[in-house]
Amino acid sequence: MDYIERGGRPRTIAEVQQCMKGFATDANVKRGLAYVPHATDIFISPYAKCGTTWMQQIVHGLRSGGSMAFDEITEVTPWLELAHDMGMNPDAPQFARPHVFKSHLGWKDIPKGGRYIIVFRDPIDAMVSLYQFFEGWVFEPGAIALSDFAEYYLGRDDSKGSYWGHARSWWAERQRPEVLLVCFEHMKQDLPGIVERVADFADASISPEVRAIATAQASLEFMKRHERQFDDHLVRQSRDAVCGLPAGGHSSKVKGGQAGIGKSLVTDEIKQKFAVRWRDAMQDQGLASYDDLLQQLHP
Image 1 (cartoon, rainbow, N blue to C red):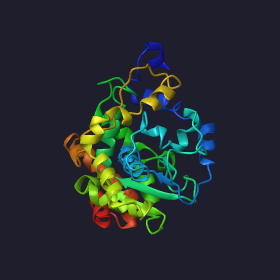
Image 2: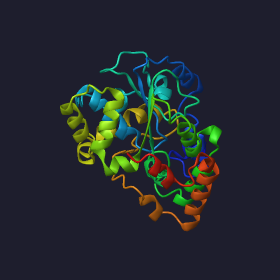
Image 3: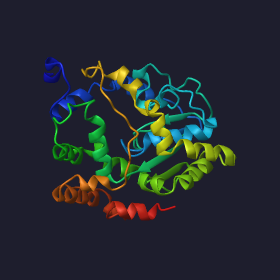
Image 4: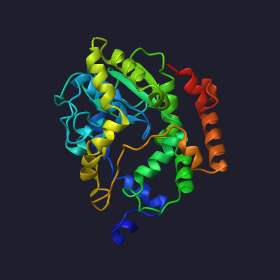
């Protein structure tokens, strides 16, 4: 791989794709997916950069009474499909009940038998957030244009983990009592209200005091003050070498998270391509645009 020979990070989309092939091994992903859930288990499985870490913090706060006794949140809410590659056992006892797992899987692939929380986010915002997350970790800063990354994101096949394949798979299961669908934008607008919904879904007996603690500890201000506990440094320590990445990359997940900011950073042509991609994937589900999904999931 050219970027390894150079002693740096990928500088092209092709090199990024090659790099990410080593991120999770097929054998260990298969082991993770063989996990047999307890009925009380909660799987937090949004698409990448749609609010996964934020929801992990909410759920862990609710189940633990606000404990921050972890080095990095993946330690207490394991990433199911990456767990074995990180030396973690999904069957091991967790810090608190219920057991909670992070995932990015769609309905078809995720182990059945537990409960599932999915966060949707505007796809342009999710794409821009992933670009910013990868820049300086997975690829050299400034090496890949946002427009090129957008084209790569748009071109991902549904069978290989596209945003739209993931969204479609979970939207189809929205009537299941074990599935809770929320939106990133609604979390921004009314965090206390979303925490209430999540608490009722997880365990209706959670006290008002614990709900208030979990809400406060899921605020941007609180998570910024504890940024290292949400920065994926344990993931990087585990996966950088096998991906051929030099140490020292940065991948903070606690940013402003402004809803709609992505559209100000891309061209009208890219916006139109995202709109067409959405309609092609979701219009037959009664969702002609992401705004339609927002309206249908409005609390």
